[in-house]
Image (cartoon, rainbow, N blue to C red; front, side, top):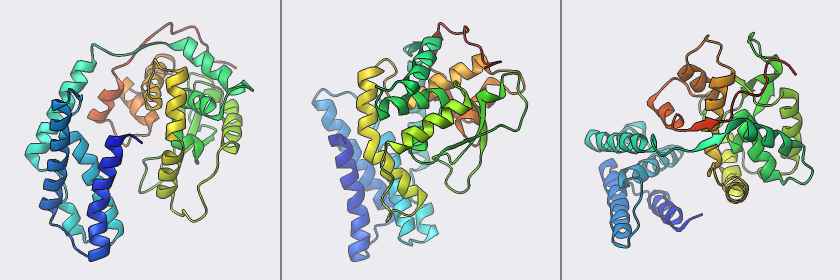
Length: 306
């Protein structure tokens, strides 16, 4: 964990501990003010030291406020209080404006990947006896569009129900997605490798990782444990073998670019196909973040037969 993340977590925990130990709860406005002041000071200090960040202090503060809100909810803090724990309208407008500017800038400095070669390399990786568990996890993330936590923990891949123009082995109903908090909603998605090979590899990969300890009961906490335990190993492997992509999460951008080329049968728009396949509840502006990606060497693979 980086120094910045450690310091952010320490700040976050301070608010929670204050409530747990002393039953002292700051007002929502105070929590937001403390958080914004903390990150603004950090960004100003970084700027003085010659460190220029792509994001603003608001983008760092917002997830911390959300996590504080989640933890206080677990401790039984009333909903009326929690509903007020958020950025005000002006700060939200500034944050959205900054995100839009960043997204616009990335539209002319995006990554371009040789798509078909990447897919074939990842397929080979799944059957390579010399490949590490992290390498196989990364390969499966590329070929399924799933998060590494879903692959390691509990995502399932079953036969599709709908008819498609491509072969049914390249489609699957996927369940247990990481960010479905209130209910499990299976989604039918394209695959860049045959489903039987995906299921076989998934079983092998999971046998190589330790499962969350038995005292961690809730699925939410299990996901956090998997992320905390294995994220650095995944990140190191990505840096070593797939530096052009960078972060494993960016394979989801690659995935939607490829499926819109190979699996678009005009029953859905590109945006809807991407949104559904990523497991998003609806098309939103978040989807635009996935569109700043490019591919070349694409079109030579056959997904209509096996």
